[in-house]
Image 1 (cartoon, rainbow, N blue to C red):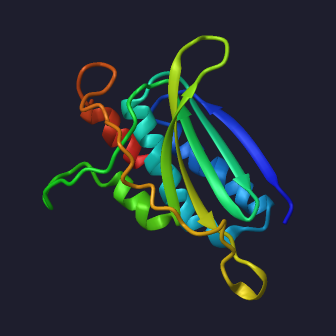
Image 2: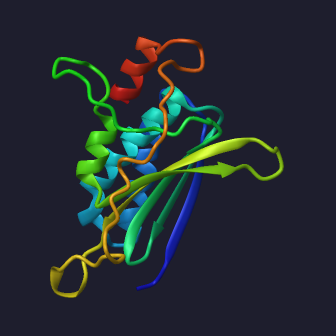
Length: 172
């Protein structure tokens, strides 16, 4: 399978999740992979929302299609996210669980930013692509990465999760 790769830099803001969804949708459509849209768009929306709410700096979106669809969301924030268990009535805390259900694999990694000496992180997911005959191609034996150690900051850059920003990000 031919390898495709596109990258987009998004300003951290309430429009970032919507812009990310449109970017990924256009890429998948141009690569004739619209069957991956629903799962990919939900997962990228969750990761970009987290980067906007809890990360730092611009959001870099990298979409790669080969044997699998891999989407990376990078920011300059230091904390690595981890799934948490919230009460059934909680209004937050389900994003990484959704990513885990939508993707075949997901994980995190700390990354060094070239040139500025700052650390950052990448949160990624992979979705197996349809193979010949409709079977799903895989990148090998799936490795469960959803329990990687890490910490999601409990507050946003401004000291608390801004509920208005959260509502705008979710409704975008």
